[in-house]
Image 1 (cartoon, rainbow, N blue to C red):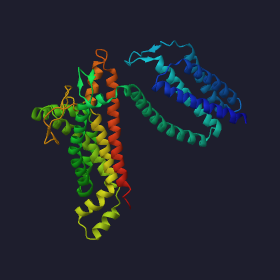
Image 2: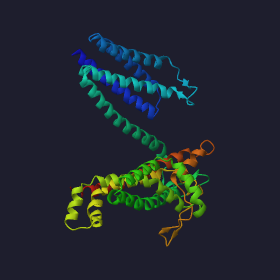
Image 3: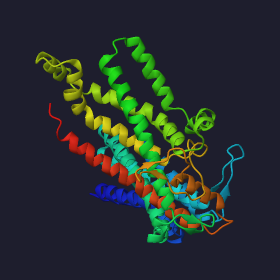
Length: 409
C-alpha cells in the first residue's frame, strides 16, 4: 500500500513538474511561485525515492539513489543560482539565461520522476521498459502538440490587439507603422495560387508517368533519388536560381515568384503522388483492363480517383510551404512598397509586376524593431499569416476527406 501511495505521489509530482516547466518555457511567466513549487516537489520526490530504494535489491536501489541525487542536485541549482545567471559556453556562441535553465532542469526532473514511478509500478522488468517506451512515444506526441499550441498562443496573445478592419483592408503606410496588410494578403494569395498552378500539373503528371508508364527500374530509381535530393535543397538556393535566370528575363514579378515556389514544391508533390498511386491495389487496374478499358481510361477513372486523397495531401503540404517561404521570393517577386495587384479584365492578375507578401512584410517589420513602433503590427502580421496558412490547410483537408470517403476497395 505504501508503495502504491509513493508511486501515485511520484507520478503526480512528475506530471506537475512537466506541465509547469513547459508553461514556463513557452509562456515565460514570473518564476517566483513556480520555483517554490519545483523545489518542494523535488525535495518530496527525492525523499520518496530514497525510502523506496531501501526495499529493493542492490541494482534497482542504485538506480533510484542515483535519480534521487540528480533531483537533489537540480534542487540545489534552483535554490542557490542567482536569477541573473547566464551561461555562455566559449565554443558554442550562444548564451543560456536562468529563465531557460531553470524550467529545463525542472523538465528533466519531471521526466526522471515519471520514469521511476513507472519502474516502481511495474517492477523494473521488461514490462516496465515497454510501458516506459510507449509513455515516451505518447509524451513526444503530446509535447509536439503543446509546443505548437504554445507558439500559437503566444502569437495570438501578442497579435490579437493589432487585428482590426483597417489592419485587414488597408495597405501599410509610413514604413509599416500605420495602415494594414491588405496588399500583403492579396499578394500572398496570388503567389500561392501561381505556385500551385505551376507545380500541381507538372508534379502530378510526373508522378503518374513514373509510377504508371515508366518501365525502366534503373531510370525510376535515378529520377527518384534526384527528386529526393532536390527536396533537400535550401530555399535560398532556389531564390538565387530565380535571381540569375528569371529576374533577368521577366523582372521582379509575380510570375518569377510563382515559378520559383512551384519548382520548390515539385519534389514533394511528385513523391507524394507516387506513394499515393502505389497504394492503389493492382487488382483494380487488372479488373479495369479485363473489362476492356484502355490504360489511360484506367488511370483517369480508376487509379487517380482512388489515389486522390494522397495526392491532395502533397498539394496541402505544397500550399503551406508556398505560403510560408521568404528566401525564394525576396529577390524575385516582392517589394515592401504597398502595391495592389493590377488585374486584366478585373480577374487575371498582371504577372509582370512585383507584389507584397506577408512573410516578406513580417521580415521587414522585424528589421525595423527598436527603430520604429512596429512590434504590435509585426505580431498582428504573424497572426494573420498563421491563420491564413491554417485556413488554407483546413480547406484542403476538408476536400481531401470528402474524396477519401468515396474511395472503396
